[in-house]
Length: 402
Image 1 (cartoon, rainbow, N blue to C red):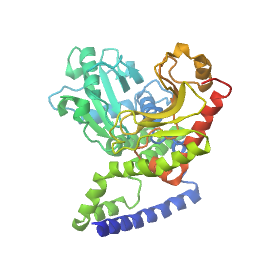
Image 2: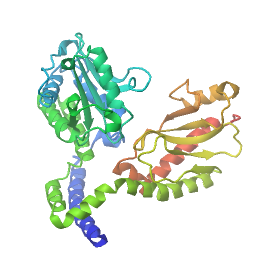
Image 3: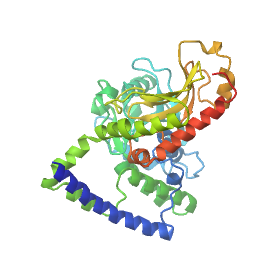
Image 4: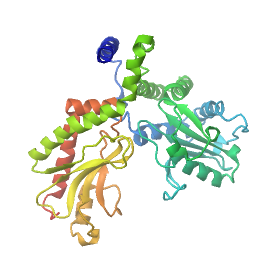
């Protein structure tokens, strides 16, 4: 098996090297510039993908195209609806579009934040759960389905619940919690969204700035879905050969184990070095379940701090939504920690009312379930970013009794 794996990897590498040569030629011509890549936003579900899609779907957004983009999007999802449902009669002239719509505190099968929510004045809804690399959350699709049921008086013809992923896969039972496939629609960035965006490009032919922005976003999605390679069909055909299937499936089935290996080996060693260099103590649990654990992370303890430690934690399963900041060491009330308000001001924390954390988003690499982040760990770029984050927090703590 090892020889078979090595041969497969070597041969696929030759394909990717050929594609890299083409990319360098484009770079030399100035054809490779991509604003989203330059800003390191390509995997950010909320700050790029949900915002960008919601902007295009909003008839009143600054693109100035009214409902030209929304209508073909609705046509796309309607082609995938359950045949027992009536067409969605949504009034595009009265649309409201929300990103991260708050529908209440999570309580069993209710509440949460809907990634993209579209509603017209008559109470017709399109609810989109947007997944790039993040894992499913408990009862997430069921919670959003319940919200739609309540808002639409259980009339299934008045809403569409969409599950959007890179490849169009089904949500897990962990998320659907008893829902049937007829209760939602699965769409993919790779096929459905890119096809729709190409239609948007056609509709924007006389708006060069908008058109070029759409083209750059399409290029971003092609990279995320590995459909940007000139020779992708050749690679897929090669991997599909009978003699390569065992190795192909072995690699596909061991992605999580590979990530565990990088986290427990390369990253752990780097964080130990960082802690030593900065006079801190690393608190890090090596585990074989990084991708499936809730709230995995690590901390750095300062020898002179009584109340806080520097911590980093993934807020979502699948190593997604990484935050960093000051976390309380014990059960002491925040009101009893004199420096809390000043430290919060200096840190510009996201959540003023949090009782455990003073924190912010780790914006450069928020999700680690992707090649970009794993490469950054292996190449040492992630270590540099974490070092900068620690230094930022140490500067915030300067002169305070923590």
